[in-house]
Amino acid sequence: EARAAETRARWAAERVAAPSESRVRERRLPAAASADTVLTHNVWDDVNFSADERTTAETLIAAQPLAPSAASEQSVAAAARLWDEHYTVNPRNYHDRRYLQNEFPQLARLLTEGDGGPLLLEIGCGTGNTLLPLLQANPLARGLACDLSPLAVELVSERLRRENLCDRASAFVWDVAEPPPAEARAGGGADACLAIFTLSALAPEALPRALAHLRSCLRPGGRLLLRDYGRLDLKQLKFARAARGRLGGGHGCEWYARGDGTTALFLTTEAVSALAAEAGFEVEEVRYDRRLAVNRAEH
Image (cartoon, rainbow, N blue to C red; front, side, top):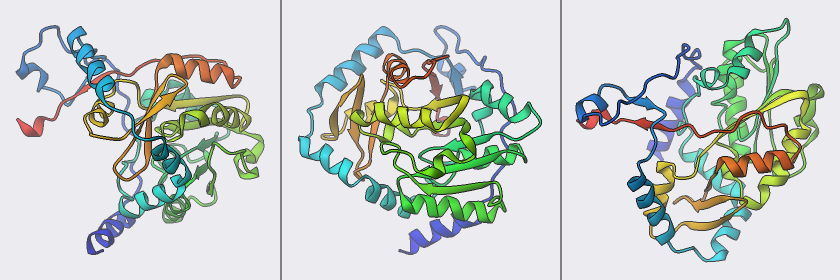
């Protein structure tokens, strides 16, 4: 309890930082790079698995047995409670995403062009780690934030009050697998819907209707900007090494349970493209973002 109180106090003292400076994605790892070369940067761009690494990963995933079907049913039924428990313990688990304007040129243009501010809808908002840095970047931008966890909505609402942003943004409870409430369509629809590591928290069978719901919340010409776990992500391989937790999959996705009961999907570009098109989106781009992250502190 003392540790949880300390974590909450540190979270309450944090303020939203300005967005990161622009960076061109051109940090390429040379072929047959030495260990010393790898350690010269924290992150390398566009690094692919070798054929042997891919084979090892696929073998690891295939060897993990499926959990009983009751495990997935329980995770879905208790999702709101499980995420409430998650944020009770981990309000600081996710850092503010200050990099999104670098990742989405469309978002950067939306925030800098035109006379008025855009309306942004963040789904699966948690404590507002996506929306708040964007509101900081553009004093005219407005925001809507939603989450299926009532506690997450309380936390992001607290942050909005702390940052004096309540006149520009609001938060409400919504499980995007269910039909959208009136709040999700405020202002005639959002200019952009931000789904950042959010769709992966759904069950596979919920993806088609969730995407259809999101499309209905966009104004004509509005965009869905999505970033999420890709298949063969190192996090998936970590799940695959566990004795249990593999829930199965569907719609081209593979599904796992964390130790706290919350779940994660790992997506393919083919699955995302097909699901988005089925929901009525015009798919502009879907691609993998492959990076090598280097923990230099261990060396």
